[in-house]
Image (cartoon, rainbow, N blue to C red; front, side):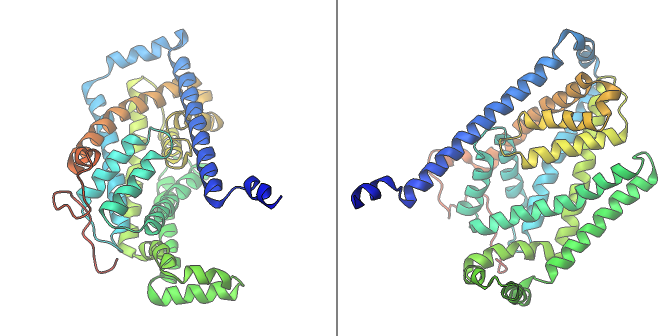
Length: 365
């Protein structure tokens, strides 16, 4: 009987294997769902009722197309800079190396199964020597700094007219205040004094059992995220880059609308651009499909589609996605060439290979 029971109960390894298996199935189903949403969007855009809108693409000026592509290139560069800036307080890096990794990861983010995240972790851990937990803290710090910019923009859009100066003051001022609050809070728990203060606070709230793990080297690696956020210049620079990124993406929406002969105001462009960016960042099933569908859905809820028509907004969003894909394909190719990924695929890369661009380890790591 005991043997039968032991055979019936899965071991820890079997349970983990099953969990990973179900996770992959869920990712696969989610990816197919995303493709289905994308196909549905495309079918609406290509419908006979929308042919006149599509015909405007043939009349697009070379300057407008160049600006549209330049905006996608700018957002790719800005996001690479943000990754580099946020990591800088704890590990000095090569900006070209981080930007190349970001370009390749952005390209493969169209694929399912979180391959882009796995690629980032693999490169930064195996090639650059950044601990996995520190990589997680790094990504979390980037997300926090993104919220400090997006939240004030959303709040300003709810209460103020996006065409007024007060909207800009509320957004930029709000972003500065939110970033300053994050830096101040992180500073209270940064460095060794902050680390000990954090441990005392955890014990005080009755979570002393957590200190046994957080007090180890693993906990210190996670704590690096707080050190990143506490760095005033890095957080300010990352916030400024994120503001520039959102502005560039809003300009991209506005230019795409102009090419399609749609009179889209700045507020609508900001709503679509912010949603487009946010879904690409947080979607658990990849950005292809959900990003386009949810951007149009949010535009509908905001009343933008009621003014312009759902098909029109969907055409703008898909036009942006198509032009962006061309830029990301080129950027990913350049990044792959810089990183010498061909050598990785052939299994000839070692962590100490001097010909591979990498991070420069600092004493702060």
